[in-house]
Length: 474
Image (cartoon, rainbow, N blue to C red; front, side, top):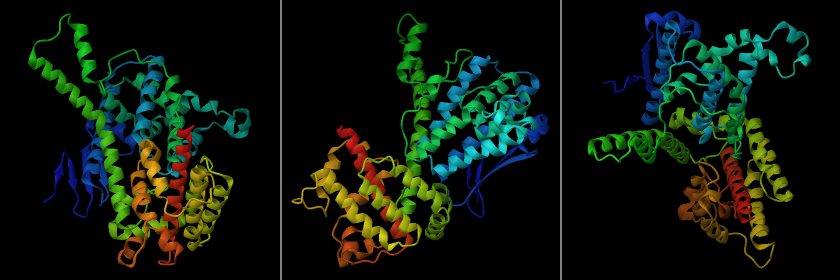
């Protein structure tokens, strides 16, 4: 029997499916904008955890219903108006919302680079006027893209890419046609900056984003409270009432409203944690370490028995992009030139299929860097077990070791896998993720792509931790 979850049905062949009929009164306009006339459908592939499927379905349904409500409001001349200034201010709220949706788990930088290219070359560029094609250098900033006819042409695609319908639903807003156009145009001007920030996040750059400071405050029309605290509700009540409430039922209602708002605010965080745990669980079963280059969507959508092969195919096929992403991070690490050169040689050797090189080059280099950084290259100190480094790491703030959302798994492997002694009785434990003792003494031969990639990932993590620790020490 099919399992129903608020309109989401488990499909016979695996995965989930949901349907939403398009009402007759907006069907023509909906088909013009979204290329669907009778029924919107959502298909979620097999292997997707139920809680992820529910979240995706809720967002999809909210977006479809908001599209329908917006089309009806436009058709009837209804909806909230906006001044141009408030349209920009609302776009500022959208910007913060959009970045937060992806910031904790941005995925690979390649995705956002391709997202930006799609917006530029597949959405905006085709609307360029003949005058631009004849003399492109005369308008290097593409001012033509802000002309009314271009705005009208790209607006539906911009709204879909930026998830405007989902944002408006989260704010409990419906805009009239003029306000909607002003708002989407303001979003269009800020979509590329949002993409650029998320590309930085995907590359490991979490420096402060100053873009939100440039937006004006939204001042016209109520927005649904989002993340309101108990204290804000209490202060609002005190503003409206000269004396405190003594009516317990009313206090309870206010508290329940606060708890619902808090739950709404916490849910994205909990979903993010569940996402990371699920990815780490799936990778752990096949002996892969998580990394910022991990194709997370592929991990979640691939059947478990096929995942190992698919990951190897991905890292072979996308190696050029993976290599760029790894070396981009390397350039920001505070390690000496010798470490940079050695790491680059190991990465380049991997690219040529010399997978044995990674363990035999990077493990000694990790030890050399730690010897230099911790002991000042003092020959009296042992540099193989790294117990002192792990003990020191345990005394630092958690943010030093947890450099990425998935870093818990890397820290655990550093603590109880990489530098423990390999014995015959526990040999199987070290066959996928290399162990320094087993590699250095020839106990296990690490010759496969997975072995090499796991070693590169662990070296990348150690260098990131060292860099973070040095910044804190200053």
